[in-house]
Length: 342
Image 1 (cartoon, helix red, strand yellow):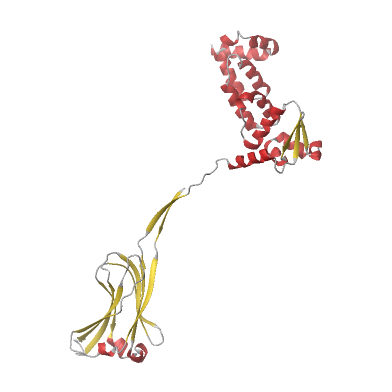
Image 2 (tube, helix red, strand yellow):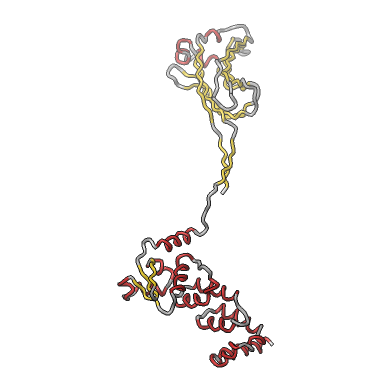
């Protein structure tokens, strides 16, 4: 799986600027007097190596209505890097003698080259009404809370895991090979096979019935198996645990019988498929007989169609002559089907 991630790191600084003897900047001067003062430089530590300062401008003007002189304070956030598209968030405010924030101005801007005006504070709001509170000891305290966002970085991660497609089958195969935790013995002739009761019950209704009723198998945890060779039962057990059979084609016919006996339909299906691939004129009647005996309907239909298509060669075989003697009903059905197609 491949996943991409985008992240932006924010860099923050709170810069406090104390301006002593502020009255020197706001006394009544001549009209259009402008005084400029800069704070010290500071940085947030962003990757762009940002540099900033706060600029104060005190401008004295004449009020056209009252004909009185008044002074306004203007604050600017100055970018000293001369860069464009700096993603910022900031607030600027004044602290009174109780450290209360006054005249708060908040912005979220992409800053480019040049100055950005932040806040203007009229002289009377500082001077006339709350001088002692807003300017303790004739000192103006300006604070800037500045956040700069680094350029977003996108990375791609690819999870390289070797995932086993059939993990449960792989685990059961290890359990089958190790016999760890086995709690039942299957006796086939002179051979004993250790197995796990729960797995046998889950895979075969016939084996489940043996352990579900008050039978000797349930009491002794031992299953006697007859009418099957130990070689075929070992392959049957392999399929029960792993859903696979080693060299299936070589034993598909006998495994079809075992799958039918123990009602393992999935094994029965792959045996039918295997036998259909090995169908020839010489063995078709034999396979048809097995398909009929073990109720393998798909294989039976497939074999009937094959025989019908090759009936002229098949009726000359010894197996067909034997079929006339042993199973007249089936021989009749074949000939009937052949006449239908012709």
